[in-house]
Length: 98
Image (tube, rainbow, N blue to C red; front, side, top):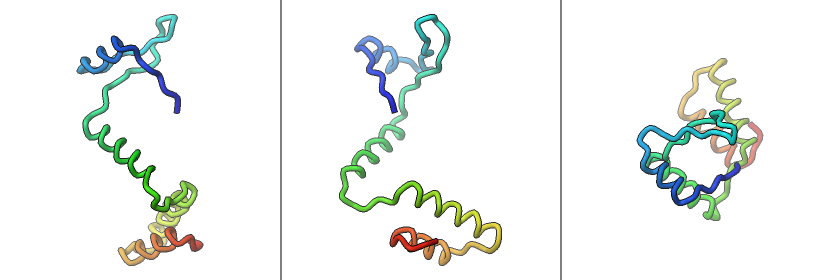
């Protein structure tokens, strides 16, 4: 993800705006609206940063996508129980085939 670093004045305007700031290109064409993060969003970002510093094992995105696909397949063919969900999660964490 790219980052734009605001000047002190630009950052002040963003933090003081209750309705967001319209962002435009050099020709004045609208590009989007910039909103200040809520306290909850800022806390979630900080929590994610802390998790990244942790030595705990992570589950790759492809593995998570496979798990979600498995849950979708299960939902279409059978009743999903907490025991079945736990079994899929165990397999995901251990690296076993789904």
